[in-house]
Image (cartoon, rainbow, N blue to C red; front, side):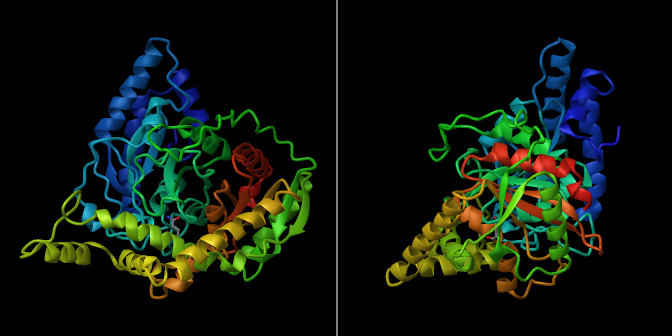
Length: 480
Ligand code: GLN
């Protein structure tokens, strides 16, 4: 069995036909994850004991003839800003280097209940702030498609682990694009579900009104199966939705006849590095599948980057106030006063990007500027959301590039935060609007770099994303 290519269905078949035990799958996944980590740095920790215990439960159920669960024996990776009981959760930060959470995130609990094997925690930009994984305190991740390039961020470790094949699926978090952009850079599927579809309980907060947990996987079907396991109301997250969870896989019937797909003109400008050519091919493929393509406009798109960086920094400055050296974190030694302890702990503990955002966030929330920046950005957020709701009066779904460019070189954008922020120019709009959006592989550039096609649906339109993305994938989208 080649662990690098397995899907959820392959694992299930292997277990039920007794070709492998869950224990063997866990051991092989851990071995390969450790081996490949030397080149990728995708993993921050391995969970050998926990994975073997979960595998024993699955093997026991199979031996007794019981249903081992929809994700039985599937090796999964968890982004290291999603808490795991007894397993270090660092958020890619020096501050939390030794933080061992006393509970599991709801999404983790649900994955394990479905039979998944948690094999380890994956690298990320510090507190999920970044687009390249270079903001991790534990070193950058290298893109499996080209080790000189970034895997994207902030869920770069999860994307690289799935692309490399050590994990069949992973959980990431997406605030402004952090699942979709690394998925597109690494050539895997990534879904940011509707805000509220998956409980945020146990996701370390960055910007609470935007944060979501979602799956990364090698196929659309696998992403659907993972979402199926983790979605749904959770009384421990008051923003999790009551909406019933549909059967995601049964709607993937391959039929796209007459589906109206909008192509927003604002998203096809300034594409570089071979992205435009891949989008042309995607357009033809969608048309050949029977989609009715329509040019549309989302006129407030140019305001999305400033709007997002005002709102996310404001929320981050408040959320990150808890890392004060008193609870959770590392504490600066040799200090005389409480104020000095706070200042040194935070000054030495946070990396540059977190500090930049805390400063910007406290500024936009300050008494004199609240109306001019924060309140104004909230209004712009409403306009961006209305653009989408208007568009969904004319089309069923929207297709765009995930990013204006493919994976860039390590270090290339490090000195220019504004350039870095542009990586997410096409993903943050759906984040601001709370809409579900998915990245599906859309071939590679002549240099061999993966490109992602972003599909956006109305709120709770995940079934449509899976149907559309699944048909695109089946028709050869990944090898365009
Ligand atoms: N790259 C964006 C940022 O730095 C998005 C991050 C995210 O989605 N967590 O904020």
